[in-house]
Length: 287
Ligand code: CDV
Image (cartoon, rainbow, N blue to C red):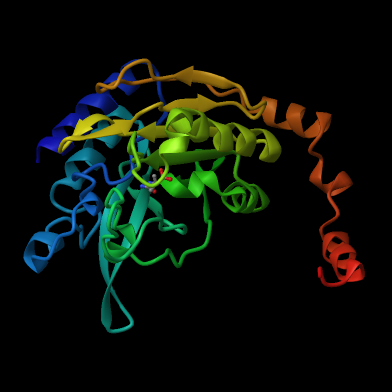
């Protein structure tokens, strides 16, 4: 599989730069097929992995073991659960030993189930159901790592839940088209709206974020790129500078998390979740 060769090559480059953990985009093994209104069941089924690692992705896991560099990888998952086939937009986390640590299933599935006239087709809801694994956090060499996929990054719930579950680092994979027909007035803000929620999410939840995008042309559609590594201070520590295959790295100082918590976000000391509900009850219903 050409995609796997490409990913192994990128993993080798990351390892050569000293990376201990890497993240690849959402649906990294295939094209972003939800841009198409597909009707051929065999063709659709061909986009999903029914096992992970499978014969091809095992090669990537073997490379991780050889390079001692774990990775997170977005892929389309098909699984038999409760006597039926279920399809999820999934990210797997693989350790330095090449073994699967755990997986996350995308919670916020955007777009629609059928093509709407006059809009760019984005049919993710036709091909995937929302994730059913919550926002899990995994131990990776003693660091607590959470995962998120694409549209998840725009929702404050994603960051807050991962933070409350103890994440120190969040790995994100995404596929964002440069143009969406339904929002021409917002077209110039595409990159701003990419980074804004991730920088705010990192800052307000004191986590490091590494976000990996597909970039450039895929089947004629321009994808945004803008892969980045964001510090718990909200600053972008490293940013992709091209729309080609590119590796960006940063040595994340995990002590910065405690510094940022001390300065403003000491949850145990200042956060008052039990009071938030009470206050809105006292205020009564809005007219
Ligand atoms: N793959 C995605 O989740 N894409 C969404 C939009 C553009 C449909 C995103 O939030 O980038």
